[in-house]
Amino acid sequence: MWENDININETNVILCKSNVYFGVGAIEKIDEIVQKLTEKGIKKVIVVSGKGAYKITGAWDYVESALKKYNVGYVNFAKCTPNPTTDGIDEATKLALEFGADAVIGIGGGSAIDTCKSVAILMKYTDKTAADLYEYKFTPKEAAPIVAINLTHGTGTEANRFAVATLIEKDYKPAIAYDCIYPAFSIDDPKMCTKLSLNQTKYVSIDAVNHVIEAATSKVASPYTVTLARETIKLVAKYLPIALNNPEDVEARYYLLYASLLGGICFDNGLLHYTHALEHPLSAIKHDLSHGLGLAMLLPSVIKNIYPNKAHVLADILAPIVDGLEGKPIEAKEAALGVQKWLKSVGVSEKLADMGFKNEDLDKLTDLAFTTPSLGGLLAIAPTEATKEAVREIYETSMTELQ
Image (cartoon, rainbow, N blue to C red; front, side, top):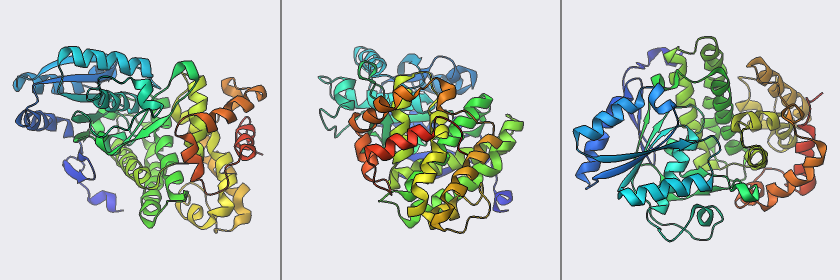
């Protein structure tokens, strides 16, 4: 296998819209990054993180050391939670502005880095709020410089222009996508991912798989997104079981992180559709629901819906996790059951009913999929017609295990 020829201890620079320092030991590049920030006149930064992972992983030791070495002032907003909220973003922005920060460093998974991106915009638009941003009341053209230090292998947000936040009072969980929030520099160090719990390991990896399935089958998919999707799913299928068996296996984390990076670039190009559009209402209502788990519960039913229209693509990219598909539309149920079987093989068997959702929730979830800002745009590029009836059926058949 080609993976055997790769030196995982060598840090590579992967050029996408962001400069991503990738490999075991890449965290040490924060010294070089901070130096480059100072050369651009950056004197103060706000560091955005969750409550503990930034320290538990050891990432903070490197960041703080570099900031002190180059005399960069810093303040830490260490309150990011899963499914970040607009209220939290506003609080972090207020801290950044009061401190006089010139740039933002995000340390964490998607929640911290998406918060970081949002704060970076609002630092330039001081008369706006996070709700204004996520309800599309203005179109940002600039943001403060962003550095993303990634601690998970799922979102790919360190290499793309997307961010997500929840407006709690409206049960909205919209996404934004602006060129100004590509991180200037990102760090993907597999050693930073070894402290992920087993559930986090599963859920973030499933997020990466969903990214590429959607990006390879949307109306704006391309050969590039299909190629990235094929490689992403192959790597997750191979290395996720290894990481679950031995969380400290750095090689497994390396390739899961690489798969996640590919997935982030993939949907930056091919965008997303059903699974993400329908998951966002789930975790907007139940704030403690892991995004990756929400996606997993929906994915088999989404596959059943889209397979007849994208049979050849799906048969190809799903081959590492579903055997025997020939790319025939009549295989839709077989493909859906195969994906469900794979999810169960990595320890994810929950369905919506298991998480407390009821049939009486279906209408509200369906309405949110169409009324939440940005989600209608995702549904519009789904490979099948995303009617309210089709969306409701996906939710309904995701309540329990497909038979």
